[in-house]
Image (cartoon, rainbow, N blue to C red):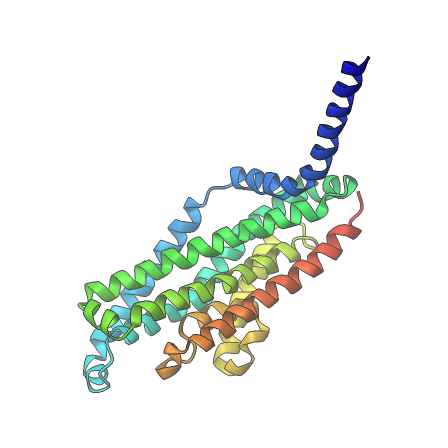
Length: 276
């Protein structure tokens, strides 16, 4: 009887520990499941493609205006600024929006949110999708910046890049852009709780990219109000001396992170109210 009692108490203790620890792992399990659904290779390939286009654009612009840049003693900065502008402002945010739209539309089609809501696990599913967006943002930023650095080296500005502290600047700008790209994916994830079809979400992503370009041209001081406009600001800011400002990098990273947190809050409330 004593052995039976000890065994029963041990089993009860293990069950209690499992009950306590299991919720801590639910998000990670859901995240791993989201990772199995889609690969990061298309994300990396998209970033590499637009990185190559940006690199070619930066190199061509430098060659075309070489005399002007020579007078200004500008080398790698010109390649970086001109190579980043269009991809980081339009193409990469639009691409990330498409990938997030695929996940959001799939979740709606499979009624994943309704099932998660019925099990009181809507927050787990949301966090898994948000973490997936973070992965895509990090891959996009890393691959794209690598392509730009490669173009700078090919142009023969590698020594200038190291001598001017440019490599640290690009690394800092790349890290600052991650929360900004993350905010773009968060917009579509949140929108996916209202918009059920992929076509609607894709249209929202394209519209966001177009509006970001318009607001950066017409009212750059208001760029922080548009998540799709954040990545290009994090990467190049206004150029000039501000390009080297680490406080500027931290500022844009903070704005991107603030958008992620705000959008998560909105999406969390919406997910909790969806009908099971």
